Image (cartoon, rainbow, N blue to C red):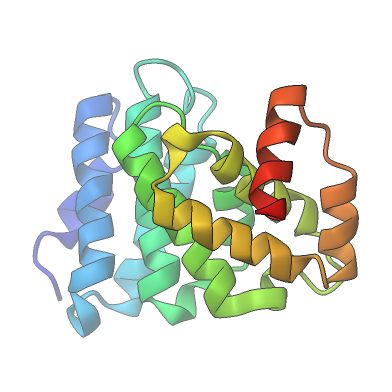
Length: 196
């Protein structure tokens, strides 16, 4: 057992945004580096706390948004470094995707959008859902990476471009891409990325 984990879980939903931000950041570090010392039960409880943070009615309020962005990053680390998280609770992916793009903490935005690419690379078409139900959300998230350079680094944008090219072979993803409502600026950026 990681000794500080119960404290981090407790304070992940604290009323103070700065306390929440520190606690959820710590949970992400545990997911990434603690290995088996971060037990399945602790991981389950941590995921529940993180979901509570990002689904709170005030999650996107100015004083809460950085803590919420850090919670999304921590959930991404849970999904990447704890293979059982996605299998045990696919709804975590839906919660995570629905929050994208990050808008307050640009450092975490770069990390989270790289996580997005890693999850799609690792799980491929399975992330789209049994009937392609996640295709619109996934495609929109990848397009956001390409059309908003402040959300990612050059390597992540290259990965997102490659993933969108590959996803066009999936009927649900191809349809989602065709149906996107984009501004003229976004459309030009997307076309430039996909044609280059």
